[in-house]
Amino acid sequence: MKVTAVEARTCVVPLDRDIAFATRAVRERHYTLVRVRTDTGAEGLGFCYGGTRGGALATLAVRELLRDCVVGRDPHLLESIWETMYREALLQGRRGAVIRAIGAIDQALWDAVSREADLPLHRYLGGYREETVPAYASGGYYAENKTPDDLAREVSEYIDLGFDAVKIKVGGVSTQDDALRIAAAREAIGPDVPLFLDANNAWRDASSAIQAVREWEQWSPGWIEEPLMPDDVRGHAVVAKALATPVATGEIHATRWDFLDLIERRAAAVLQPDAGVCGGITEWRRIAALAAAHDITIAPHWLADLHVHLVAATPNAVWVEYFTNFSVLNIGRLFSTAPEIVPGGLALPQSAGLGIELDDKAVSRYAVDDWQ
Image (cartoon, rainbow, N blue to C red; front, side):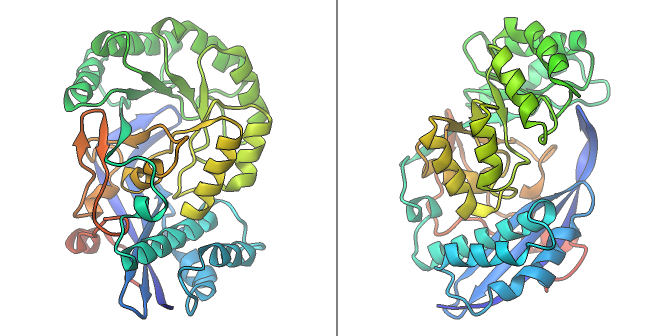
């Protein structure tokens, strides 16, 4: 079995309405899609988020930097191909768009080989959970004229859908105004449902983060996510030591070396590697094993269509993050398939590979370039 082609394409998908979190307003999202073809006819799909602008950077990295590392290789040589791509990127940089491109290709290779084996990816990876994975409903974004009562209704709807935990945004308004939002959400879902708070790097220093979260601890948050910029690992460690609330972070970090730094500095109780960001499935599994060796749980960021498989195959992975519609994370508009919500989480896909199929009409509608 040999890889005969690696193609990439950029899509820009507008949101239904503008939304915001602590540090950014969002109107559209950029995605890179990767397609791997093989001489047996098996194909694989990979993808990554490119941000709210500049999505073509990862696509360019696939085409100009990484493709030649893959074509002609046996796709089962996943570790070898990953190392070849990573070494090739030495001078161009091994973070940002380049590592996302590596990850998207890596995903596509895993999809191709598990499709060839006629196994769902979670079974091909070895399997741990058999039928479902736990998932939390992610939302609670800021929007114009959105009140605490509106937020309460939103999180109540998530519980009605069958989710056992929810996440909302914080850090985009004053500590006191966020307290009203948190209190409304807590009252709506009850005292026993985990309520996660996501700050999206809202605070400039550890002391500000500590002061704010301490005011909110009366509502028993399940974690405070990304209180500081991801580069500030030392600051995360200070926050983690000071608070009763667990710190979660990792969605922007890439490779096992970034996560080793977080672990050694005790900067987080929950790590959130995103296989579309950290270097793909191959590197995500290394990170999860590293975390397990230090008794740290994993709750991957975004991309439920992908992470449902990884959480299902990883004992120390405890949650999938899920968005119930396309008003926030809209990559699902490019797919004709979607995870099935069941009480407490998501059903495991049973079709081969990732089980994700592109909606070709939607891809053509939102694409800004061609497959090449």
